[in-house]
Image (tube, rainbow, N blue to C red; front, side, top):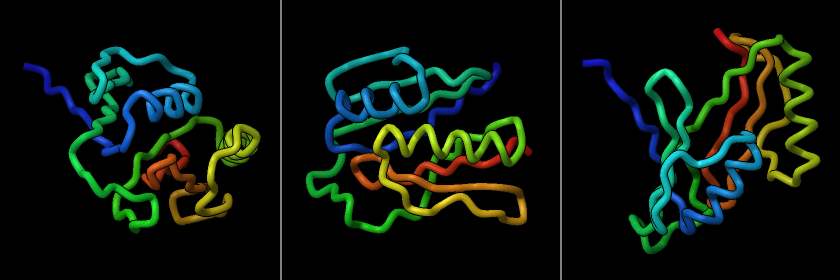
Length: 121
């Protein structure tokens, strides 16, 4: 059996978060209920947005995990993605910078969950 991996991000409003992630990643949900929405990412992996798990979910609470979008195309592709997302009004957590694995930046969704963009390994 081939494994399937689902990355779950806890959100306060699944439909609103699905609109945010759908616009940001330019993809449509593959499964939708009022409180649980998934996006098929290919290769047996999915991104799931799940609301209702925490009554006191707050964007001000520091996050210790990230969703990472790995892009091909090198540093210029990372910078272009940053510029596109900033134009959409996302909250920037960390401006583009060079790390040991390449150019990267971090933004946050409306609930404060972190989204890193980095190069494909």
